[in-house]
Length: 126
Image (cartoon, rainbow, N blue to C red; front, side):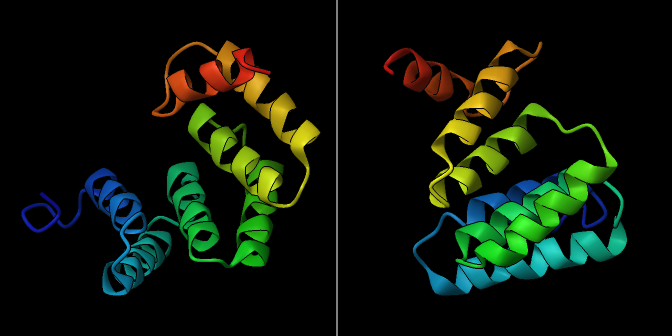
């Protein structure tokens, strides 16, 4: 889909998020390229910034991800998906209580996000 519609930011964003989960380092590098291109094209969109920060986190660049998320949260109200990403970053930094607060808040928001069921199950088990 990304090849057919290269200007479709949502398709590009989703492709990058899938690629970064791969064990193949070439695909992970491609995820970074796509997310950087998305940021250049849409520098003020929450979804592109959040996805780029998540990709940085998944690639081990925690400091860059932390900075990107901090800048993002100072500018806009974040979506549940972005909240999930931030909570995972906080967990990786040993800030479990802060992460839990975010997760509890985002599951109460209307609508859904990809990991909502897993978050609900995780919160119920604690």
